[in-house]
Amino acid sequence: MPNRVMISRDSKPIPCEECGLPSLHVARLIAGDGSLLGQTMVCTACRRHRSEAEAAIAVP
Image (cartoon, rainbow, N blue to C red):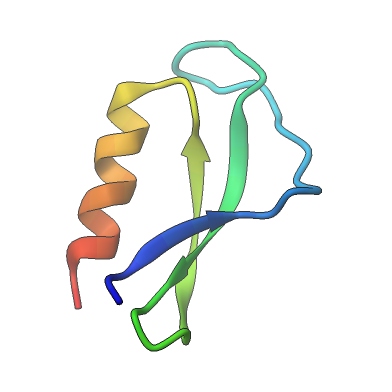
């Protein structure tokens, strides 16, 4: 299983500094084996934030 970003269903979004939309969440970076790699902020509206998050989980 590949690495992935997981946003909790009960996570309350806050306004993003980039796009201004209330779509910034704390997300967990999960390894393919299920272990926690770390946490990051992910804006579900910004393409820039999505690409940074994807790059972060691509690093083993």
